[in-house]
Image (cartoon, rainbow, N blue to C red; front, side, top):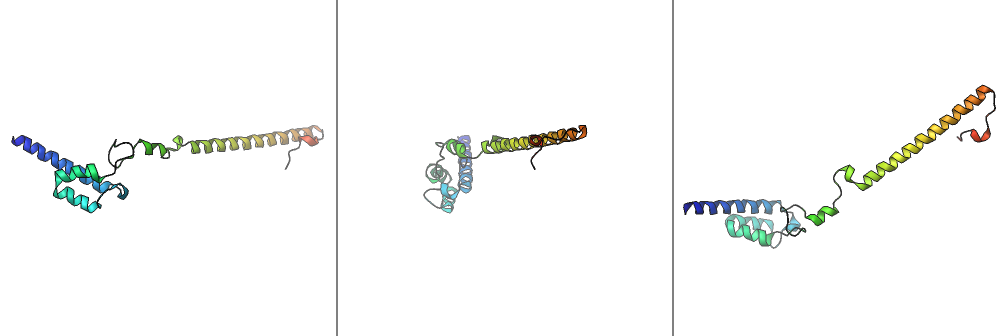
Length: 138
């Protein structure tokens, strides 16, 4: 019988500690009914009843239907969040692709100008006058 009493006492302490952590880490918009300090005092002075009251009536349930840890956003909020890593962000990937396309076009344009300039140099060297359509526009 003494073991049962010790076990229930430990369960009560663990429940009170969890309720205190949950209460102290909750944001202001997640606390219902009473101010935070009142909830802390209730949990401290009445550990079993106060802890159960906090979990039932004191904290706002997460949007995911109460799944997960207190303070961690539910599934509905996770879908609306921005991606964490840049390679998961579609806007970032689109901007990288556009930048690469612009750089490729610029490189291609420079190669064409260089090719036209070299062809003109070869024609001048061979004595042939350059044609008007072959000259690069400046």
